[in-house]
Length: 301
Image 1 (tube, rainbow, N blue to C red):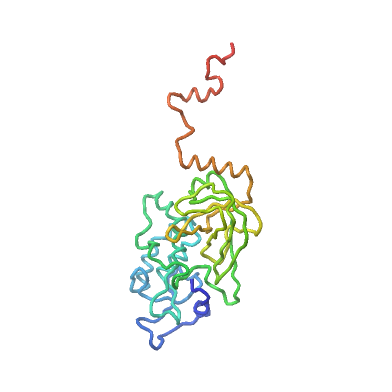
Image 2 (spheres, one colour):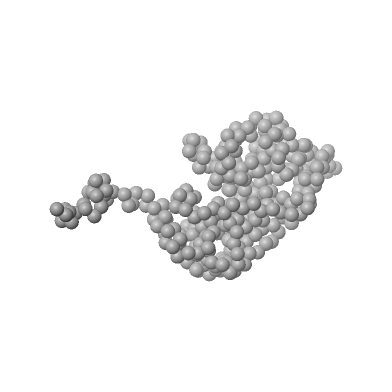
Protein backbone atom coordinates (compact mmCIF):
# COMPACT_ATOMS: atom_id res chain seq x y z
CA UNK A 1 0.00 0.00 0.00
CA UNK A 2 1.16 3.50 -0.79
CA UNK A 3 -1.02 4.98 1.90
CA UNK A 4 -2.61 8.27 0.86
CA UNK A 5 0.07 8.54 -1.79
CA UNK A 6 -1.73 7.19 -4.81
CA UNK A 7 -0.13 9.80 -7.05
CA UNK A 8 2.84 7.50 -7.50
CA UNK A 9 0.56 4.70 -8.68
CA UNK A 10 -1.39 7.04 -10.93
CA UNK A 11 1.86 7.97 -12.63
CA UNK A 12 2.46 4.31 -13.39
CA UNK A 13 -1.09 3.81 -14.61
CA UNK A 14 -0.89 6.90 -16.80
CA UNK A 15 1.70 5.11 -18.93
CA UNK A 16 4.84 7.04 -18.11
CA UNK A 17 7.68 5.27 -19.83
CA UNK A 18 10.48 6.67 -17.74
CA UNK A 19 14.10 6.82 -18.68
CA UNK A 20 16.63 7.80 -16.05
CA UNK A 21 15.78 10.30 -13.35
CA UNK A 22 18.53 12.66 -12.17
CA UNK A 23 19.81 11.53 -8.81
CA UNK A 24 18.24 8.07 -8.97
CA UNK A 25 20.52 5.19 -8.03
CA UNK A 26 20.85 2.02 -10.08
CA UNK A 27 18.85 1.02 -13.13
CA UNK A 28 15.89 3.02 -14.38
CA UNK A 29 12.31 1.85 -14.74
CA UNK A 30 11.63 -0.36 -17.75
CA UNK A 31 8.40 -1.52 -19.42
CA UNK A 32 6.89 -4.76 -18.08
CA UNK A 33 7.59 -7.54 -20.59
CA UNK A 34 6.54 -10.55 -18.50
CA UNK A 35 3.43 -11.94 -20.26
CA UNK A 36 1.69 -13.07 -17.06
CA UNK A 37 2.01 -9.59 -15.58
CA UNK A 38 0.90 -7.45 -18.51
CA UNK A 39 -2.70 -7.43 -17.26
CA UNK A 40 -1.68 -5.87 -13.94
CA UNK A 41 -2.39 -2.16 -13.31
CA UNK A 42 1.24 -1.03 -13.70
CA UNK A 43 3.35 -1.00 -16.82
CA UNK A 44 6.80 -0.19 -15.44
CA UNK A 45 9.13 -2.40 -13.45
CA UNK A 46 12.75 -2.50 -12.34
CA UNK A 47 15.43 -5.17 -12.24
CA UNK A 48 16.82 -6.81 -10.24
CA UNK A 49 13.49 -7.85 -8.73
CA UNK A 50 12.78 -9.13 -5.22
CA UNK A 51 13.92 -12.61 -6.26
CA UNK A 52 17.28 -11.22 -7.46
CA UNK A 53 16.63 -11.85 -11.16
CA UNK A 54 18.83 -9.43 -13.06
CA UNK A 55 16.71 -9.41 -16.23
CA UNK A 56 13.06 -9.88 -17.13
CA UNK A 57 14.08 -12.80 -19.34
CA UNK A 58 15.25 -14.65 -16.22
CA UNK A 59 12.12 -13.61 -14.33
CA UNK A 60 9.88 -14.97 -17.12
CA UNK A 61 11.49 -18.41 -16.86
CA UNK A 62 11.06 -18.42 -13.09
CA UNK A 63 7.46 -17.20 -12.87
CA UNK A 64 6.25 -19.69 -15.50
CA UNK A 65 6.49 -22.48 -12.90
CA UNK A 66 3.39 -20.99 -11.24
CA UNK A 67 1.14 -21.20 -14.31
CA UNK A 68 -0.39 -24.47 -13.11
CA UNK A 69 -1.08 -23.07 -9.65
CA UNK A 70 -2.64 -19.95 -11.16
CA UNK A 71 -4.86 -22.22 -13.21
CA UNK A 72 -6.42 -23.66 -10.04
CA UNK A 73 -7.72 -20.18 -9.08
CA UNK A 74 -6.72 -20.94 -5.49
CA UNK A 75 -6.46 -17.24 -4.60
CA UNK A 76 -7.49 -14.02 -6.35
CA UNK A 77 -4.36 -12.43 -4.88
CA UNK A 78 -1.84 -14.92 -6.25
CA UNK A 79 -1.16 -13.27 -9.63
CA UNK A 80 -0.91 -9.81 -8.09
CA UNK A 81 1.50 -11.09 -5.43
CA UNK A 82 3.69 -12.99 -7.90
CA UNK A 83 3.93 -10.03 -10.26
CA UNK A 84 4.70 -7.68 -7.37
CA UNK A 85 7.64 -9.97 -6.59
CA UNK A 86 8.82 -10.85 -10.12
CA UNK A 87 7.93 -7.57 -11.88
CA UNK A 88 7.76 -5.04 -9.03
CA UNK A 89 6.14 -1.70 -9.73
CA UNK A 90 8.57 1.11 -10.48
CA UNK A 91 7.60 4.77 -10.28
CA UNK A 92 9.40 8.07 -10.47
CA UNK A 93 9.13 8.48 -6.70
CA UNK A 94 10.49 5.04 -5.80
CA UNK A 95 13.29 4.31 -8.26
CA UNK A 96 15.92 3.74 -5.59
CA UNK A 97 14.52 0.25 -4.89
CA UNK A 98 11.54 -1.83 -6.05
CA UNK A 99 8.34 -1.58 -4.01
CA UNK A 100 7.46 -4.78 -2.16
CA UNK A 101 3.98 -6.28 -1.87
CA UNK A 102 2.28 -5.94 1.51
CA UNK A 103 2.57 -8.83 3.92
CA UNK A 104 -1.22 -9.24 3.96
CA UNK A 105 -1.28 -9.84 0.19
CA UNK A 106 1.27 -12.63 0.57
CA UNK A 107 -0.63 -14.15 3.48
CA UNK A 108 -3.90 -14.18 1.56
CA UNK A 109 -2.23 -15.81 -1.46
CA UNK A 110 -0.50 -18.38 0.73
CA UNK A 111 -3.67 -19.16 2.72
CA UNK A 112 -5.53 -19.95 -0.49
CA UNK A 113 -2.82 -21.78 -2.41
CA UNK A 114 -0.63 -23.55 0.13
CA UNK A 115 -3.25 -26.30 0.65
CA UNK A 116 -3.16 -26.98 -3.10
CA UNK A 117 0.64 -27.25 -3.03
CA UNK A 118 0.53 -29.56 -0.02
CA UNK A 119 -1.99 -31.77 -1.80
CA UNK A 120 0.64 -32.36 -4.49
CA UNK A 121 3.45 -32.72 -1.94
CA UNK A 122 4.96 -29.31 -2.47
CA UNK A 123 5.59 -26.55 0.06
CA UNK A 124 5.07 -22.80 -0.19
CA UNK A 125 8.41 -21.55 -1.63
CA UNK A 126 10.83 -20.13 0.93
CA UNK A 127 11.72 -17.41 -1.58
CA UNK A 128 8.12 -16.16 -1.29
CA UNK A 129 8.01 -16.15 2.52
CA UNK A 130 5.58 -13.58 3.92
CA UNK A 131 7.35 -12.91 7.20
CA UNK A 132 9.85 -10.33 5.94
CA UNK A 133 7.44 -8.28 3.83
CA UNK A 134 6.27 -4.84 4.99
CA UNK A 135 3.21 -4.62 7.20
CA UNK A 136 0.36 -2.47 5.90
CA UNK A 137 0.84 0.61 8.07
CA UNK A 138 4.55 0.39 8.90
CA UNK A 139 6.16 1.00 5.55
CA UNK A 140 5.78 1.44 1.82
CA UNK A 141 4.19 -1.57 0.16
CA UNK A 142 1.65 -2.31 -2.53
CA UNK A 143 -1.68 -4.13 -2.39
CA UNK A 144 -4.56 -4.45 -4.88
CA UNK A 145 -6.72 -2.22 -2.70
CA UNK A 146 -4.18 0.61 -2.76
CA UNK A 147 -4.34 1.07 -6.51
CA UNK A 148 -6.66 3.94 -7.37
CA UNK A 149 -7.80 4.30 -10.94
CA UNK A 150 -7.51 7.57 -12.80
CA UNK A 151 -11.19 8.19 -12.06
CA UNK A 152 -10.50 7.62 -8.37
CA UNK A 153 -13.17 4.97 -8.07
CA UNK A 154 -12.35 1.83 -6.20
CA UNK A 155 -14.54 -1.15 -6.95
CA UNK A 156 -14.81 -3.91 -4.41
CA UNK A 157 -15.59 -7.33 -5.75
CA UNK A 158 -16.71 -9.53 -2.89
CA UNK A 159 -18.22 -13.01 -2.96
CA UNK A 160 -19.39 -13.80 0.58
CA UNK A 161 -18.76 -17.37 1.70
CA UNK A 162 -21.67 -19.34 3.14
CA UNK A 163 -21.14 -21.03 6.49
CA UNK A 164 -21.15 -24.79 5.96
CA UNK A 165 -19.50 -27.63 7.82
CA UNK A 166 -17.23 -28.35 4.85
CA UNK A 167 -16.07 -24.72 4.66
CA UNK A 168 -15.55 -24.50 8.42
CA UNK A 169 -13.47 -27.67 8.60
CA UNK A 170 -11.43 -26.69 5.54
CA UNK A 171 -10.66 -23.10 6.53
CA UNK A 172 -9.91 -23.77 10.22
CA UNK A 173 -10.66 -20.23 11.41
CA UNK A 174 -8.69 -18.76 14.32
CA UNK A 175 -11.70 -17.13 15.91
CA UNK A 176 -15.49 -17.27 15.85
CA UNK A 177 -17.53 -14.60 17.60
CA UNK A 178 -21.07 -13.36 17.94
CA UNK A 179 -20.86 -9.60 17.60
CA UNK A 180 -22.90 -6.49 16.93
CA UNK A 181 -21.44 -4.05 14.40
CA UNK A 182 -21.06 -0.56 15.85
CA UNK A 183 -19.44 1.15 12.88
CA UNK A 184 -17.27 0.66 9.81
CA UNK A 185 -14.35 3.10 9.54
CA UNK A 186 -12.20 3.95 6.54
CA UNK A 187 -8.81 5.58 6.87
CA UNK A 188 -6.41 5.96 3.98
CA UNK A 189 -7.91 3.11 1.93
CA UNK A 190 -7.97 0.89 5.04
CA UNK A 191 -11.35 -0.36 6.28
CA UNK A 192 -11.82 -1.39 9.91
CA UNK A 193 -15.01 -2.82 11.42
CA UNK A 194 -15.71 -1.90 15.04
CA UNK A 195 -17.83 -4.57 16.74
CA UNK A 196 -19.14 -5.33 20.22
CA UNK A 197 -18.39 -8.95 21.14
CA UNK A 198 -21.42 -10.70 22.61
CA UNK A 199 -20.14 -14.27 22.70
CA UNK A 200 -16.84 -16.02 21.96
CA UNK A 201 -17.39 -19.36 20.27
CA UNK A 202 -13.73 -19.95 19.41
CA UNK A 203 -10.45 -18.17 20.05
CA UNK A 204 -6.79 -18.95 19.47
CA UNK A 205 -3.70 -16.94 20.46
CA UNK A 206 -5.13 -13.42 20.34
CA UNK A 207 -7.12 -12.51 23.44
CA UNK A 208 -10.71 -11.50 22.65
CA UNK A 209 -12.44 -9.41 25.33
CA UNK A 210 -16.23 -9.25 25.64
CA UNK A 211 -16.00 -5.62 24.71
CA UNK A 212 -15.58 -3.39 21.68
CA UNK A 213 -12.88 -4.72 19.34
CA UNK A 214 -11.58 -3.84 15.88
CA UNK A 215 -11.63 -6.25 12.97
CA UNK A 216 -8.92 -5.28 10.49
CA UNK A 217 -9.37 -5.90 6.77
CA UNK A 218 -5.87 -4.79 5.68
CA UNK A 219 -7.58 -3.51 2.55
CA UNK A 220 -9.93 -0.90 1.17
CA UNK A 221 -12.78 -3.41 0.88
CA UNK A 222 -14.94 -4.88 3.61
CA UNK A 223 -15.34 -8.51 2.57
CA UNK A 224 -17.49 -10.11 3.83
CA UNK A 225 -19.75 -7.04 4.06
CA UNK A 226 -21.15 -5.86 7.40
CA UNK A 227 -23.96 -3.44 8.25
CA UNK A 228 -23.99 -1.21 11.33
CA UNK A 229 -26.31 -2.18 14.20
CA UNK A 230 -26.68 -5.74 12.90
CA UNK A 231 -25.63 -8.82 14.86
CA UNK A 232 -23.45 -11.41 13.10
CA UNK A 233 -21.60 -14.62 13.60
CA UNK A 234 -18.09 -13.81 12.35
CA UNK A 235 -15.36 -16.33 11.53
CA UNK A 236 -11.90 -15.06 10.69
CA UNK A 237 -8.18 -15.15 11.20
CA UNK A 238 -5.72 -13.37 13.45
CA UNK A 239 -2.45 -11.49 13.22
CA UNK A 240 -0.64 -13.06 16.15
CA UNK A 241 2.36 -10.76 15.82
CA UNK A 242 0.24 -7.64 16.30
CA UNK A 243 -2.54 -9.20 18.40
CA UNK A 244 -5.19 -8.28 15.85
CA UNK A 245 -8.35 -9.97 14.65
CA UNK A 246 -8.57 -10.00 10.85
CA UNK A 247 -11.63 -9.92 8.62
CA UNK A 248 -10.08 -10.73 5.27
CA UNK A 249 -11.05 -12.58 2.12
CA UNK A 250 -12.09 -16.10 3.08
CA UNK A 251 -13.66 -14.97 6.35
CA UNK A 252 -17.36 -15.51 7.02
CA UNK A 253 -19.99 -13.12 8.37
CA UNK A 254 -23.65 -14.11 8.51
CA UNK A 255 -26.59 -12.65 10.39
CA UNK A 256 -26.71 -14.26 13.83
CA UNK A 257 -29.09 -17.16 14.35
CA UNK A 258 -29.10 -19.37 17.44
CA UNK A 259 -29.34 -22.44 15.24
CA UNK A 260 -26.22 -21.47 13.29
CA UNK A 261 -24.33 -20.82 16.52
CA UNK A 262 -25.14 -24.33 17.74
CA UNK A 263 -24.04 -25.80 14.41
CA UNK A 264 -20.69 -24.03 14.57
CA UNK A 265 -20.07 -25.40 18.07
CA UNK A 266 -20.67 -28.92 16.75
CA UNK A 267 -18.42 -28.30 13.76
CA UNK A 268 -15.65 -27.09 16.04
CA UNK A 269 -15.93 -30.25 18.12
CA UNK A 270 -15.42 -32.27 14.94
CA UNK A 271 -12.43 -30.13 14.06
CA UNK A 272 -10.87 -30.61 17.50
CA UNK A 273 -11.75 -34.30 17.81
CA UNK A 274 -11.97 -35.71 14.27
CA UNK A 275 -12.31 -39.32 15.48
CA UNK A 276 -15.05 -38.67 18.02
CA UNK A 277 -18.51 -39.88 17.13
CA UNK A 278 -17.25 -42.89 15.23
CA UNK A 279 -17.12 -46.40 16.67
CA UNK A 280 -16.88 -46.40 20.46
CA UNK A 281 -14.47 -48.98 21.96
CA UNK A 282 -16.06 -52.40 21.96
CA UNK A 283 -18.89 -51.40 19.61
CA UNK A 284 -18.99 -53.02 16.21
CA UNK A 285 -20.15 -51.48 12.96
CA UNK A 286 -23.08 -53.88 12.89
CA UNK A 287 -24.15 -52.78 16.36
CA UNK A 288 -24.00 -49.14 15.27
CA UNK A 289 -26.07 -49.83 12.18
CA UNK A 290 -28.71 -51.74 14.12
CA UNK A 291 -29.32 -48.62 16.28
CA UNK A 292 -32.03 -49.06 18.91
CA UNK A 293 -32.35 -52.79 18.19
CA UNK A 294 -28.76 -53.43 19.26
CA UNK A 295 -30.06 -54.21 22.78
CA UNK A 296 -31.39 -57.82 22.82
CA UNK A 297 -33.97 -56.91 25.46
CA UNK A 298 -35.54 -54.43 23.10
CA UNK A 299 -35.87 -56.93 20.26
CA UNK A 300 -39.44 -57.85 19.56
CA UNK A 301 -40.36 -61.46 18.96
